[in-house]
Image 1 (cartoon, rainbow, N blue to C red):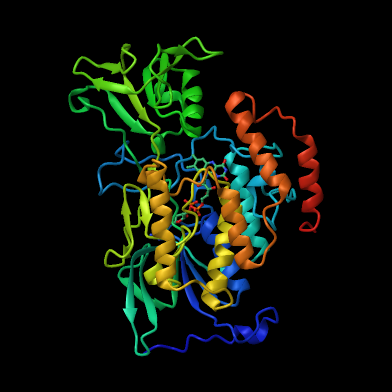
Image 2 (spheres, helix red, strand yellow):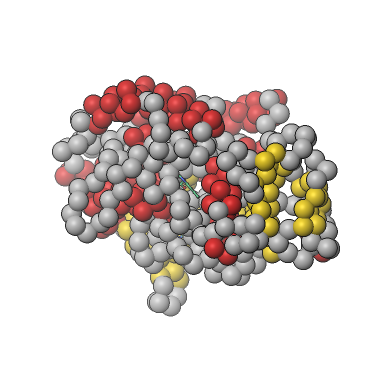
Length: 467
Ligand code: FAD
């Protein structure tokens, strides 16, 4: 027996015209994406229930000194540690562009309880402060069920044939799984927890240790070791530098470093950039494609993560294939299951918070009927055309959600659908500036900059949102 899904909340919310439908919506995860989704759903007049496996909000931004027992994450029965943060991590985006659009990431009030970090590229703890402030200011805590893990999500058909979803959840320290029916499910479980591991010919016979960056916290265990780190992405570079302070040698294996010889890294006498690894050998040797070879103690895989939705049962309507979650209309809705099922925060090489904010507004508006989606056929055609375009451009499937080249175009499309102004000009310019500086001055971009003018524009803009 289903209770009526139409909630009296409209009557109380003058902003929502009463001909829009209020839905009961499950949000999976209380990280940045789940939190802003919950806020937008409630603003739109929906009833949001947020399920959070851990005992606090913040997701990725909750630093956990523990690591998983299997350092490369192959053992499927291992205990999962959610966050991949390392102790020294500072943001790689300036705080002005990183925050939600209507809730600027400025230095919070000093209430004596929290240690604030006023730096422009603050340490990770400051981001958690910000998300906790967000939760308090919008009173989101009351929507969240902590220590409650979603273990299964599946479609059910009820009498009137409107699609509904069963969410099966498990509360820590309380036996038994519980089923609850929802009109919609918004998946916000994050995608930086399940390691992607590099394949290395000969690795089975190689005697050294391997670890994925998911399980990297502090450099100390690498003292006096010879380390190969694979991957030269943002965290690969930061971690290599972190380790080089104590290790004997650090050798970075990178796809982007073309043939040539190993390159000593400026400012270091114990760090080199190589081409990719060719093979690993029984005597501990690692051979690189540039022909060089080194006897190595540890391989550190900074090779990224995999999308993973172990709880989701869609009869293969939604699949993860070579790290493409699909088919998804605009990276959010599976056409055949829209609008009931949606995904927030999948795109990468983006500014995640404001992007998730716009996706959340779109999902909330579509669920209420205020914003219309195209027909299933039209959405499927759109997705198909997008995949063909990627293929024609030679973009591998696993880069489907890499939005490096068009995140602002995408944001502006979402904003138009939602009736919001497009991304602020200063935010786009500041992102370009920060990206450039990160490349040209990887050691110092967090503490030296030249875009003071843009900071002033941002602060001016923030005044409309600050008390
Ligand atoms: P998460 O923060 O991962 O939250 C997911 C939540 O879902 C978690 O709380 C988890 O416990 C919960 N959950 C998962 N499965 C279940 C389940 N089955 N049932 C119930 N709950 C569940 N972004 C920036 O803007 N700036 C940066 O400088 C930056 N640096 C980064 C550095 C690193 C090393 C990493 C890994 C990421 C970084 N990011 C950065 C990106 C960061 O992931 C996003 O900022 C943001 O935290 C993503 O939020 P999310 O809500 O999508 O996922």
